[in-house]
Image 1: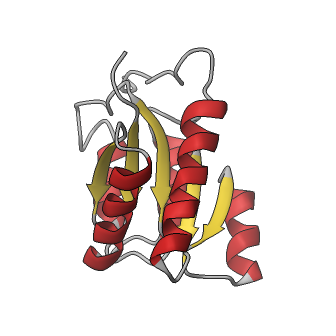
Image 2 (image 1 turned 180 degrees about the horizontal axis):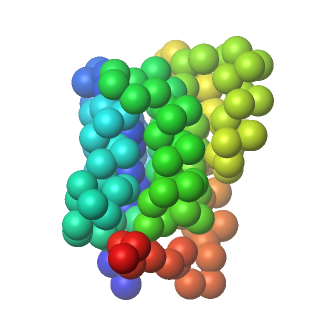
Length: 151
């Protein structure tokens, strides 16, 4: 079995660097893929725009809300409605602690909503919790199906 893959949808190079470092420190076996914009994320999950399906090892999407192009809210909706992996766990990873954002994300089908920590130890602790919860403790018996493109 291959290493689990986490898809991180984030536009801030600094946040990407910090999360990559945290994964290397607490969950080095995880393959972290990064998509830097909302539109690129929508395209990644759209069979017409990106014919190659996501890797079978994809186990989790970490999604920022404030993205250029398409918002994280839009990306979440597209993953749930129009992608080949509608059941993939999506964890919102945002600086927003606004209740309206939290409520909207759960209504749109996110599996969890986490507020980004502001310090490196808090980030490592959160990434360790994410890795344990979503990649170890909460694995499905079989991976969520990657659906073929519609005709």
